[in-house]
Length: 283
Ligand code: ZN
Image (cartoon, rainbow, N blue to C red; front, side, top):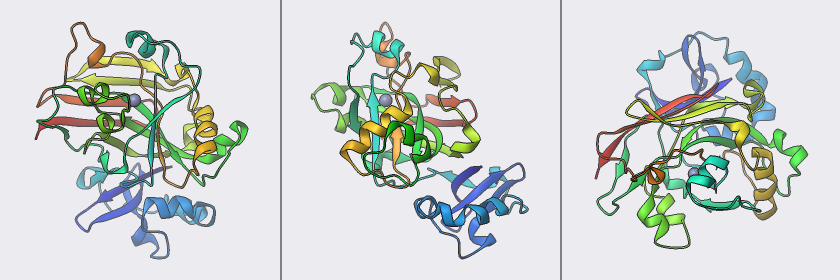
């Protein structure tokens, strides 16, 4: 199932994306949760009703709604660094022996087709095509073998980064958390529909040119390793967002490095998950 947060002129709603368009869950049943986080939290109780709603005639054509980030304001967004071999090599780093985590603060989460800002205070904004895992029921100290059940679904993400800010401090949080620098979407594909999340083609394109191309089978630490590690430190909650790492081909590693410039169009495509696309906008 594909679950979206969208605006058809009446504010944020959640719905199911079907072949016919978008089914507005609020119009199917006012008893269903009204936000994606509430829907994920209540999933065990409501999933049968939601599945039945997928058979209802769509309320909106897909191109008549504005898609928002499927989880517009997650409780937290965590991201792993250096998690594909080719990206580690181009970064001149050793393969990490332990997982390298940083935060993207929740206010950086952005809609799947909204502009990404190039702020005047940064001279190098870059892209990172990534598969994003959305936490389901969550919990603490989740064993790796239990981790598949802890993932609600997956979507595309761009771990956009102000490289100058990232590297001027040993702590990456500011460089990774500029407003608009965390687009995700276009919707959540539920884990059951994705099947194996470690067998998906992933591509990052700038102005139609393929800059990144890999497969999620090349993740150094799997999604399930990541859930097990993170949940030792923090309680994972419904709708939390996990950026699972980027393959090689980022702009900073080009020779010479190439920063994104205003008007550039950055696209992330992942097999089974769809694509997100943003124009770069100077602010
Ligand atoms: Zn990243």
